Amino acid sequence: MASRKQVLELLGRQESPEATPTASWGSFQSSVDGVSIRSLTLVREGAGDIPSLFLTPATPGPWPGAVAVHQHNGQYHLGKSEPAGLAGDPHMKYALELAKRGVAVIVPDLIGFEARRGPWDNERGFEQFVSANLLAEGSSLQAKHVTDVLAAVSWLDDHTDIEGPLGMIGHSLGGQVTLFATACDPRIRASVISCGLGTIESFRTMNILHNPSVYVPGILAIGDMTGVASAIENQAVFATAGTEDEHAPLWGAQDAFAGFTPGTAQLEVFDGPHDFPPASLARAADWLTAQLVATK
Image (cartoon, rainbow, N blue to C red; front, side, top):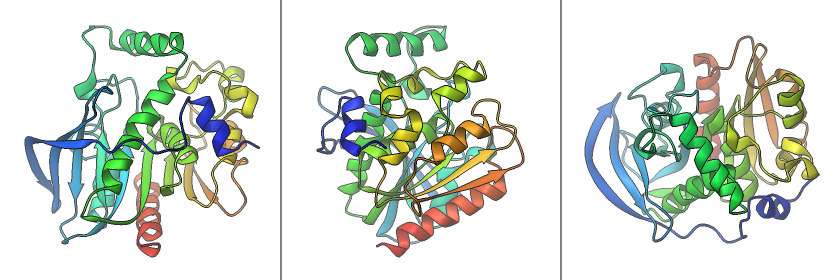
């Protein structure tokens, strides 16, 4: 068992939330299935800007709010646009599905993806370069990702058209970041983790080289991902895992899931690979919407 304090210390973070960034609205505007999509940049003094998309429902606000965190999949040209339903795999349009159900959603680009790609042709190499330099500074890529998504949480928390508790949803890398962010920040009252549960032990056993942000210095000392899950209290989690997941073996996902406090989380296992199948996505989006609306 690990505590929230231990996870915060693991990521070099404090109990206080991220300072609220300001929004610089961009020129991009679109509408998909009645959902309004606008570009914005979260501006933070001295911490780097975060290009994002903001999806608002067709119904008038105020709305419940959530942060959607995109996947990895080795596709560095895709970030925020994929969950928004503007590009990429239609199975990954989870931000759009939430907005269609009445939730306002912000989707930030993680460092290395879409509008935050580096100057290198070797984009995987640039991600490793960022990770290595953060490790040299005593930090980690996971800490960077969590800091960025919690800046989005702070922006939502301060938004006049957002009412009630906040949620988070992510697939794969996005699910992994969602797990850590939820463990760090009690403002996130409900989370969906799609194919984002796993353990270092399972990756080692199955000879899986995962994305660099999963390798957080000291994570094994607090019980691996199982320990991170155990730090989540008074928050609700809906997790999914595939029986044939080649990136996050089911047994590792089940080991990580065992860390959640009984009654806190539910795990839906589907037949298939590393994916967010439409039926699972629909159930997850319905569940998260109901959680946020019920606790407004």
